[in-house]
Image (cartoon, rainbow, N blue to C red):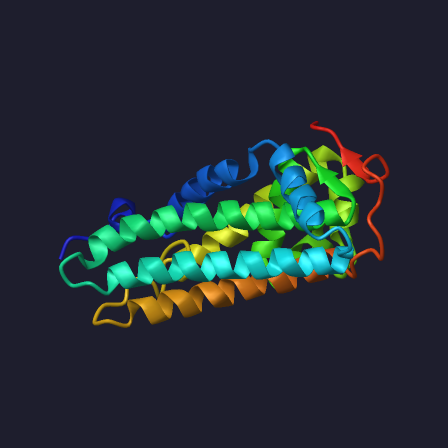
Length: 242
């Protein structure tokens, strides 16, 4: 038998690097949109419910977000369950669903920040919030270990006080963590959405619900208790692009 050379050995990092590259592109798309979209969304909710407190507006944002993720995840699962379509097309739809998931999640967490009086213009800080929220406890622990923030209500400090250089360094570490998690689980959030034999819709819906609920819980930990009243538009912690 011919000796095994270095070229014969599988590259253990290739899969993670591929996921890292895909994830970078998807995250860029999720966080690089006009901040006015979020401001308008929150303002519209307040206009429809002028007596609503910040806590009530956040509750409505949470309910809307969870419903949206469950609906889209269930739709992809249902497609995967149709034998004539198969998992190939479903995989493409799952990729599109992931992009939608990240976009909706980014909009949700930025809207929660807006209710807390934190106006996030800088895309690097948006990415920090999105990544840490997606990673849950693992992300918060990594952030705390890297920059020494408290694990409860960390978002205000991260989004208003950390230097941009620190934020970008944190993002590199968090992106790598999420890419490694995705590689371990067989691809970016795709596990459980390509099940055949008629169970795809149930798995997709349930999986989406779990993801959404985890994001909501992480956002609650990130910001802490909502303010009792809304701050004036000029009184929040405005963040300009760096």
